[in-house]
Length: 125
DNA sequence: AACCTGACTTCGG
DNA sequence: TCCGAAGCCAGGT
Image (cartoon, rainbow, N blue to C red; front, top):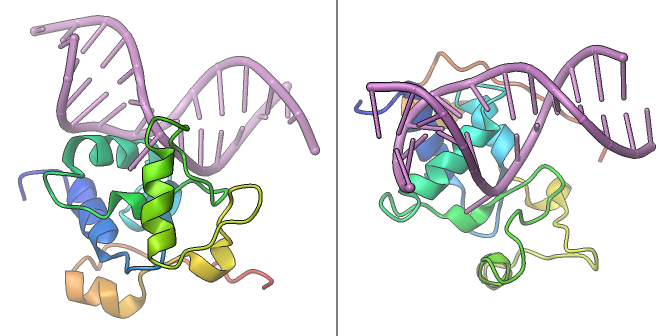
Protein backbone atom coordinates (compact mmCIF):
# COMPACT_ATOMS: atom_id res chain seq x y z
CA UNK A 1 0.00 0.00 0.00
CA UNK A 2 1.54 3.20 -1.12
CA UNK A 3 -0.63 5.30 1.08
CA UNK A 4 -1.38 4.96 4.75
CA UNK A 5 -3.77 2.25 5.76
CA UNK A 6 -6.23 4.91 6.78
CA UNK A 7 -6.14 6.57 3.39
CA UNK A 8 -6.46 3.30 1.55
CA UNK A 9 -9.38 2.22 3.69
CA UNK A 10 -11.09 5.58 3.30
CA UNK A 11 -10.74 5.44 -0.46
CA UNK A 12 -12.24 1.97 -0.60
CA UNK A 13 -15.07 3.03 1.68
CA UNK A 14 -15.93 6.01 -0.47
CA UNK A 15 -15.74 3.89 -3.57
CA UNK A 16 -18.13 1.41 -1.98
CA UNK A 17 -20.94 3.88 -1.37
CA UNK A 18 -23.73 2.70 -3.66
CA UNK A 19 -25.81 4.85 -5.95
CA UNK A 20 -28.65 6.60 -4.24
CA UNK A 21 -26.88 6.55 -0.88
CA UNK A 22 -24.56 8.90 0.96
CA UNK A 23 -22.07 8.70 3.80
CA UNK A 24 -20.57 11.35 6.04
CA UNK A 25 -16.98 12.48 6.42
CA UNK A 26 -16.98 11.40 10.01
CA UNK A 27 -18.42 7.94 9.45
CA UNK A 28 -15.96 7.23 6.69
CA UNK A 29 -13.10 8.33 8.90
CA UNK A 30 -14.43 6.29 11.77
CA UNK A 31 -14.79 3.15 9.69
CA UNK A 32 -11.36 3.72 8.23
CA UNK A 33 -9.95 3.54 11.73
CA UNK A 34 -9.76 7.16 12.86
CA UNK A 35 -12.85 8.56 14.60
CA UNK A 36 -11.35 12.04 14.41
CA UNK A 37 -10.10 11.89 10.88
CA UNK A 38 -12.93 13.66 9.12
CA UNK A 39 -10.66 16.32 7.72
CA UNK A 40 -8.44 13.73 6.15
CA UNK A 41 -11.42 12.52 4.22
CA UNK A 42 -11.74 16.04 2.90
CA UNK A 43 -8.11 15.97 1.89
CA UNK A 44 -8.54 12.65 0.19
CA UNK A 45 -11.43 13.93 -1.85
CA UNK A 46 -9.44 16.98 -2.84
CA UNK A 47 -6.39 15.03 -3.85
CA UNK A 48 -7.73 11.80 -5.29
CA UNK A 49 -11.43 12.13 -6.03
CA UNK A 50 -10.82 12.45 -9.72
CA UNK A 51 -7.67 10.40 -9.92
CA UNK A 52 -9.25 7.47 -8.12
CA UNK A 53 -12.61 8.00 -9.79
CA UNK A 54 -14.36 8.28 -6.47
CA UNK A 55 -18.06 9.03 -6.13
CA UNK A 56 -17.14 12.21 -4.26
CA UNK A 57 -20.67 13.57 -4.45
CA UNK A 58 -21.91 10.84 -2.11
CA UNK A 59 -20.03 12.31 0.82
CA UNK A 60 -21.88 14.88 2.90
CA UNK A 61 -21.54 16.33 6.38
CA UNK A 62 -23.06 14.99 9.57
CA UNK A 63 -26.11 17.19 9.20
CA UNK A 64 -26.96 15.56 5.93
CA UNK A 65 -26.02 18.70 4.09
CA UNK A 66 -23.73 19.29 1.17
CA UNK A 67 -20.57 20.90 2.46
CA UNK A 68 -19.74 22.75 -0.73
CA UNK A 69 -21.05 26.28 -0.99
CA UNK A 70 -23.28 27.57 -3.75
CA UNK A 71 -21.39 28.40 -6.91
CA UNK A 72 -18.50 26.33 -5.64
CA UNK A 73 -19.79 22.91 -6.42
CA UNK A 74 -22.99 22.71 -4.40
CA UNK A 75 -25.27 22.66 -7.41
CA UNK A 76 -23.24 20.01 -9.19
CA UNK A 77 -23.18 17.72 -6.19
CA UNK A 78 -26.86 18.15 -5.49
CA UNK A 79 -27.77 17.47 -9.11
CA UNK A 80 -25.71 14.29 -9.12
CA UNK A 81 -27.39 13.06 -5.94
CA UNK A 82 -30.91 13.93 -7.03
CA UNK A 83 -30.23 12.13 -10.27
CA UNK A 84 -29.58 9.02 -8.17
CA UNK A 85 -32.80 9.47 -6.27
CA UNK A 86 -31.48 11.16 -3.14
CA UNK A 87 -34.02 13.63 -1.79
CA UNK A 88 -33.44 16.97 -0.10
CA UNK A 89 -35.84 18.71 2.21
CA UNK A 90 -36.65 22.41 2.08
CA UNK A 91 -33.59 23.14 4.19
CA UNK A 92 -31.29 21.35 1.81
CA UNK A 93 -30.81 18.39 4.09
CA UNK A 94 -30.78 14.71 3.27
CA UNK A 95 -32.62 12.39 5.63
CA UNK A 96 -29.74 10.26 6.84
CA UNK A 97 -32.15 7.72 8.30
CA UNK A 98 -33.13 6.92 4.76
CA UNK A 99 -30.06 7.60 2.67
CA UNK A 100 -27.05 7.01 4.90
CA UNK A 101 -24.97 4.06 3.80
CA UNK A 102 -22.68 2.18 6.12
CA UNK A 103 -20.53 -0.84 5.40
CA UNK A 104 -21.55 -4.06 7.07
CA UNK A 105 -19.40 -6.82 8.49
CA UNK A 106 -19.31 -8.69 5.21
CA UNK A 107 -17.92 -5.67 3.46
CA UNK A 108 -15.07 -5.37 5.91
CA UNK A 109 -14.40 -9.05 5.60
CA UNK A 110 -14.11 -8.72 1.86
CA UNK A 111 -11.75 -5.81 2.23
CA UNK A 112 -9.65 -7.68 4.74
CA UNK A 113 -9.69 -4.78 7.09
CA UNK A 114 -10.35 -6.78 10.21
CA UNK A 115 -8.61 -4.26 12.41
CA UNK A 116 -11.65 -2.12 12.26
CA UNK A 117 -14.20 -2.53 14.96
CA UNK A 118 -17.70 -1.86 13.88
CA UNK A 119 -19.98 0.34 15.83
CA UNK A 120 -23.67 -0.14 15.85
CA UNK A 121 -25.28 3.19 16.48
CA UNK A 122 -28.86 2.11 16.08
CA UNK A 123 -30.85 5.10 17.15
CA UNK A 124 -34.52 5.74 17.28
CA UNK A 125 -35.97 5.71 13.82
C1' DA B 1 12.13 22.01 3.25
C1' DA B 2 9.01 24.34 6.40
C1' DC B 3 4.42 26.19 6.82
C1' DC B 4 -0.50 26.54 5.65
C1' DT B 5 -4.77 24.78 4.78
C1' DG B 6 -9.08 22.22 4.34
C1' DA B 7 -16.00 19.89 0.84
C1' DC B 8 -15.24 18.16 9.04
C1' DT B 9 -16.22 16.63 13.82
C1' DT B 10 -15.94 16.44 18.53
C1' DC B 11 -15.25 18.22 23.12
C1' DG B 12 -15.15 21.41 27.00
C1' DG B 13 -16.49 25.65 29.11
C1' DT C 1 -27.83 25.22 23.94
C1' DC C 2 -24.03 27.81 21.87
C1' DC C 3 -19.22 28.85 20.60
C1' DG C 4 -14.29 28.53 20.44
C1' DA C 5 -10.46 25.34 20.11
C1' DA C 6 -8.44 21.09 19.31
C1' DG C 7 -7.70 16.97 16.58
C1' DC C 8 -5.88 15.03 12.27
C1' DC C 9 -2.23 14.91 8.38
C1' DA C 10 -0.91 14.91 3.43
C1' DG C 11 -0.68 17.76 -0.54
C1' DG C 12 0.05 22.41 -2.17
C1' DT C 13 2.74 26.71 -1.85
